[in-house]
Image 1 (tube, rainbow, N blue to C red):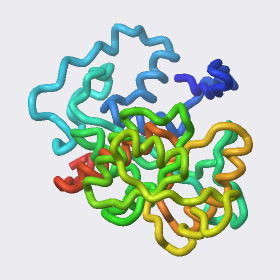
Image 2: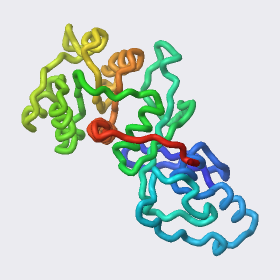
Image 3: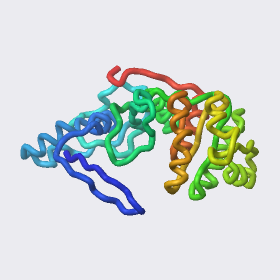
Length: 266
């Protein structure tokens, strides 16, 4: 059992450290795969052969998050095609430290983690957000400002879906133009340096319920600092990657169909 920490810079992957120990990921993976991976790892390191831990057979039809665990022998290696999705979300303590920037780096900043589990990825993601204290809105205004590399058909489709759910779209100039070309209507709003009233003013006034904001370059990241701070202090859901924004949209759409909650142990 190894704990590996990576960093990515300019498209290159770097290994920061490798430790022969369990990390907070271990209990998540154990629940997600229904395998006693810590026990298996310890027994392997003590000299037991790999043959003592056979690959698990495929799960039968109907097995999933609504079935009590354990579902199988925990000393078997997990079937990689589990009939459920597991999402881990970090819990960050930024709200406890006024003035701190919420921008993440290679340092460990989370104080805990939560897990969302469901038959579908959107609902698993929704549950993970709920567990971390993020309430995805059901209505209101969505602010969108994304870097050029994230102006994709998939993200435009996500914004279009939210508009279809009744959200009003507010966007900075370049993003508003891109959305218009994709057939999505939006209301332009000033960036912080473009004068007032700007997006920070609208956030402080309670006009914005959800934020999709991706940045690139030192100037853009610095310009978004006030947005990040206001969103944090006012508990406005804030997604800083296109993938996160798309997943949040899928979760909000899936929520309308309902979801269930039960204990993992039954």
